[in-house]
Every structure is written in C-alpha cells, then in structure tokens.
Length: 152
View (spheres, rainbow, N blue to C red):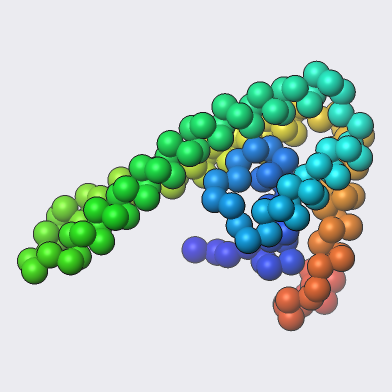
C-alpha cells in the first residue's frame, strides 16, 4: 500500500473535508474545518454551488457513518475471534474480507466525491482551489523527503 506523502496530508484533509467525506475526525479536524471554510470563501462559490456541496456532504456523511460503524463492529468481532482458545481461521478471514469490501466502498465514495466537486466548480474556481492547495502545502514544514523539484 502506498501512503500519502506527508506534505500532502493536510491539503488532502482539507479537500476531503471540503467535499464532505471526513470519516473519522483526525486530531487536526478543527484546523481542517477552518481551512475548508477559508478555501470555500476564497472560491467565490455561488449559493447554488454551496448548497449542492453541502447537500452532497450530508448525504455522504450518513452513508460513511454507516460504513464506519459496520467496520468498527467487524473489527470488534475479529478481535473476539482472536481471543477464543481455538481460532476459526475461515471465520476471521470472512470478517476481514467484509471489512476490506467496506473500505473499498468508502474509497469509491471518496473518489466519486472528488469528481462531483470537480464538476461543480468552474475552471477558474478549480484553478483557484489548486493554487490554495499549493500554497497550503508550501506553508507546511518539510517532512524530510525530497520535493518533486529535487527528484528522488
């Protein structure tokens, strides 16, 4: 599995927050919410765009909360299986597959959200959003990895 480069973590949280797919409140959720609001205010969204984004966020939030509740329950069941004296490997694997399927659904929802927001923005708003993300990422402390300009 490839992890998100740390320098992109904060902009990704903001984008995810902007599109309303924050699934578990990260430690910096308040700052991500504030950054989302700042970005929204700087995109000059129409009332119609703001309403559409909010409606979609609320709809996705409900679905995501349901998925994460199921994942939490599945993880608890897996832990219970591991606590038993005799491990039912097939049962554990079935629970694990179900968890992976739910995570896959969540990833699909995230991707669909990105596409939906992108479709709502005008080309100028999209360009402005990219500028804001670029500025945010430049303001973050360097994680000690080479920048794209420095190469690998």
